[in-house]
Length: 159
Image (cartoon, rainbow, N blue to C red):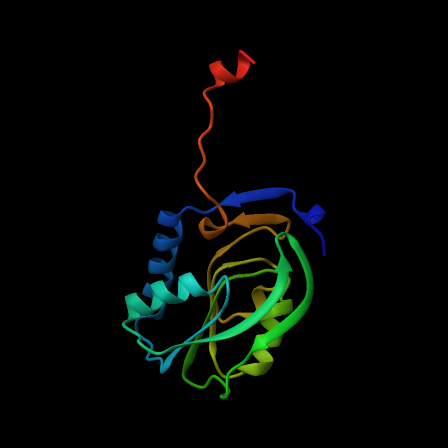
């Protein structure tokens, strides 16, 4: 899967991710979880914010690599967990094609799986998500971006 499939971009700011996570937490607040399993790396920050909002202190990780920037490749499972997910909240930033989600679902079939954003191909694999995003849309997360100086247009035109 290559970056050529993305025809739209959706930029998420730090403020937006925080607001979205808090909104998702409103849907989860009545549930009691043993802990959180974050899918690295994208699920780490949402998991930390969810842990704060739901007052969950036990956090573990499943470490999987499936992307090299915008190109999706094979799955590299670097770390799993030693339980089936019963009573645990499984967190990722996004479910895209479902490739990672399928692998994690096999590891943790009893976990309650949530993502902040979901694309149509992967959406059926999660229990809850907040916002649906088009399949051909690339999401720019704040942890993948930096703030840079942009020269004023008038100065650019002088060159």
